[in-house]
Amino acid sequence: MTKKSLPFSADQLEQIAEEFGTPFHIYDQKAIIDNVRALKAAFAWAPGFKEYFAVKATPNPYILKTLAAEGIGADCSSLPELILAERVGLVGEEIVFSSNDTPAQEYIKAKELGAIINLDDISHIDFLDRVAGMPEMICFRYNPGPLRQEGNSIIGKPEDAKYGVAKDQIFDCYLKAQKLGAKRFGLHTMVISNELDPDYFVETARMMFELAVELKRRANIRVEFIDLGGGIGIPYRPEQEAVDLNYLGREIEKVYNKILVPAGLHPLKVAMECGRMITGPYGYLVTRVLHKKEIYKDYIGVDACMADLMRPGMYGAYHHITVSGKENAPCDHMYDVTGSLCENNDKFAIDRKLPGIEIGDLLVIHDTGAHGHAMGFNYNGKLRSKELLLKTDGTVEMIRRAETIEDYFATLDFSRL
Ligand SMILES: *Cc1c(COP(=O)(O)O)cnc(C)c1O
Image (cartoon, rainbow, N blue to C red; front, side, top):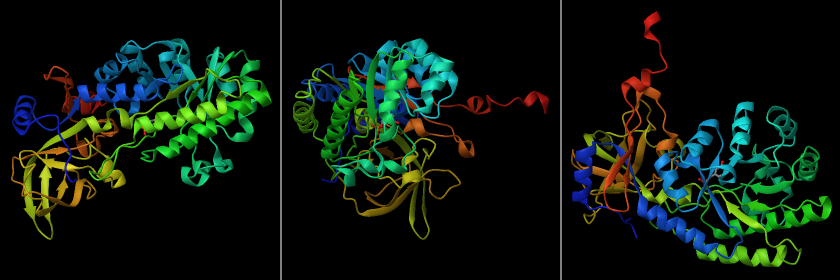
């Protein structure tokens, strides 16, 4: 398969582009809702299953609100993300605060909201206690490091990651927090990113369930929930396959029944904080072709740039491109598709086989619903695009306007020149 489907026809897209102007990210609300329902269904067996959407993936309140209506919470890691969650009406333990290298004011806000605070290090216990007071509920982020037994080789190298508490400190963390007044406990990890093999997550679940049993035996700490983090990948390439959520749910259920139930730890809540797989495939960056140039290679210059989507330029990531209206035309031309930054890595595609492209064509860049608009920056005076929502009733609403030159200058005071 070399095609990816779109939730709009070429005519519809042209109308939307004329009404709102390009470039824009557009999110398919219905597909997002169907997707989170499928995730919840796959974990329906798990007592109190909860998904906390990683806000950093798509920090737009209309997206968060859509998810909140489906019972999805928020995973925040900064003060603005906490405030976003608050502004969409999420409260208390609907929010997990999974930060690292955290300033005092962020802990204070998280505590004030009653969010579940997920500490990243043993030294942060006293820091939190001093600046905000130890909450009743506390969670720790676990970093298995090189100690990881089964499945170690497939999990990458946690020992090189800055995150989380090491194995030899994790027991002391809970005992220390308990001494300072914590009464309820959670356990968290996040060791994988953009992974398409479901067995990695099953292995992570096994590791975490075993750790929960060890915590009970060695420290008499009974955790109330285990948060398996995010990191479920999406098929950016048309030939890749999405993670089978039903398989994932079923396999984690087996491990749950094998490890937690005999240890007397049932019921224990299972949580996740996926970002990418929740919204990623259901967002599209739509951009119009401004220029064509033919030098040593053929270039298509579009009106979007890295400011709107960093992943190709930053990681060399593949994002599929559809030339709107030419879905069935043969891909018999080879192009680099570029933005306007004075950086040669500002390319959405390199040596990509596409149908013949004309100035004025609309290109749809796929899978921009997560870590897309959110990662944008203003280098080179580039302004970030608007965001649109294709709503369940088929209408389109602007859910964030494009940046303006006034926004770009908002932090400058020209009056003292
Ligand atoms: C980024 C992040 C996530 C989400 O990761 P995805 O790859 O988008 O699923 C979840 N939890 C934490 C702590 C993160 O930093």
